[in-house]
Length: 279
Image 1 (cartoon, rainbow, N blue to C red):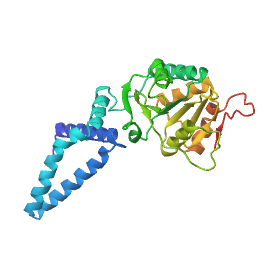
Image 2: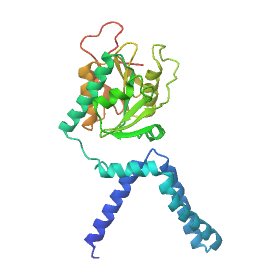
Image 3: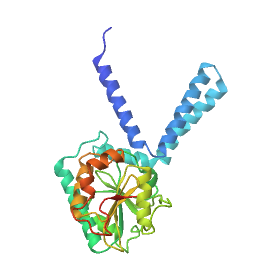
Image 4: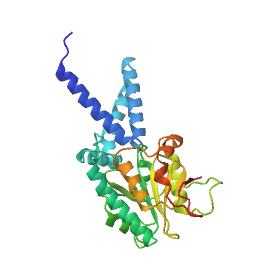
């Protein structure tokens, strides 16, 4: 049997595009719509097979109406998908070391400034688990990651300063994001709302979360429901480099934390400064 090479290429390209579109939409409300459309299509096919004319007409009309409603109702998701396609992110473009260094410099510089001036901040770095449920209801920015932008968002007179900022490897996605608070009874009263929010989002995702305390003027890190206090500047830079070059900082805390424990522990550790991860 002779195989048409062009047909195989055609099928491969369409399959890849569908896969990447689904990856972009995972974690958004559009996933529920896709499930509903698939269900309607299955019922419509069954109705046609069993020659149920009225039901077949009703389901066909519903699918037609959905084709007009989808672009309106899910405009944010479609916009994000087109932005990803235009930016070349749809195919998971790997970031070069030079690009990573530029972003690390901008973010580390912003965190250092915020720490020095005791300006509270909460930066959430999205990894494999999509945080669409949290930034879809926030203020969408989709902006380049710059030191000035991060500082200005958390400036006390900015309307967005009380919420979190969610970023990925290529852009600052949204500001003014509200996150779930960790409410475990063993959490110390030392933690404020920002730290509880950081722990909360780290418990439900694999996000890397940096917190700047406005009371103490230090930087903390939340990963997988655990908090490391008083993170040093060189540790911030190394953690961010691991993030941007595509390596997971934690995938199962027992194994990965052992491999990267030098990132969390400062060489000098005075009493009251927990450089390591604490519960």
